[in-house]
Image (cartoon, rainbow, N blue to C red; front, side):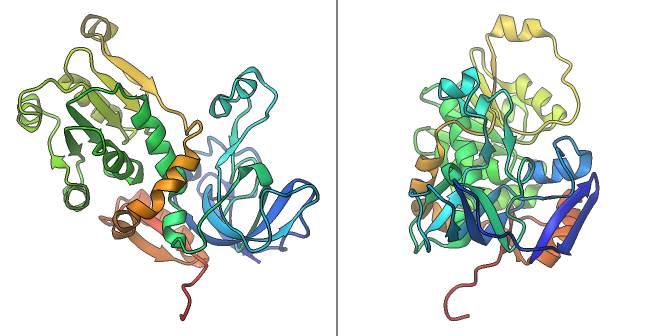
Length: 339
């Protein structure tokens, strides 16, 4: 079968490899229907930070159809369409036993610890799989995982009336906007890519702002800005964001950062600003899956390109170069009926 495999930093190859055999007890084999390229995939490609073995098949945002099940598996059946949880936890550490598997002491991810979804077939542990509606568009199903990440971040913000600012117009930023508008009076968006920002604003109804105090004040009707999601992973953007927050504000940090933050901690103390790290998601994936049908139109409208496996290396280069105004590149293997 064909798979996109990471051999080391900067070395991603599409290769013909042996297809997986019958799954072991507790594991399930899928035909991959679609997968999404994530910013963390690009980070790992560029830095090698999370390469635990090589070569490994990348891709942790995936959906597929069950084609074989190992002994002892009864939660999924042949023919089921499923979405995969991206997290690979131990189940034994203090955090896992407390139900906080996203904080597992040895947490890894599909596509790193085990082979992922940038392939024609994948084999995964049955507990990672969630059955979905057979009619759900595979492109939308592939976005369940990033939607769960955004839902975790938004739920960590205080439940207060007022505005929510999302910094970053990537997939997580878009999802955070779609979710924030359910409970916030106003949603604001900031991103240096103006074309992409305008595209997101049309879909979400968000107000485009710069990270400037006067502009923010106009966007919030002079109310203090008390809630924000930082989804860029940019140190410069975070520094600017801290300068426009109101006292008592909370920032959910969900971007993957490059570099270190140099701030005066007294600013956090004296203004009681809370910086909350948001790692993957906790138990939000089933809720996110339940929202996919409602958000389907918005999610599909922001797909950048649909590509095949052979196109993945070029897509990595394009995305790292910041080209295109879309938010998501989808690797689509399952074609709609009639094509």
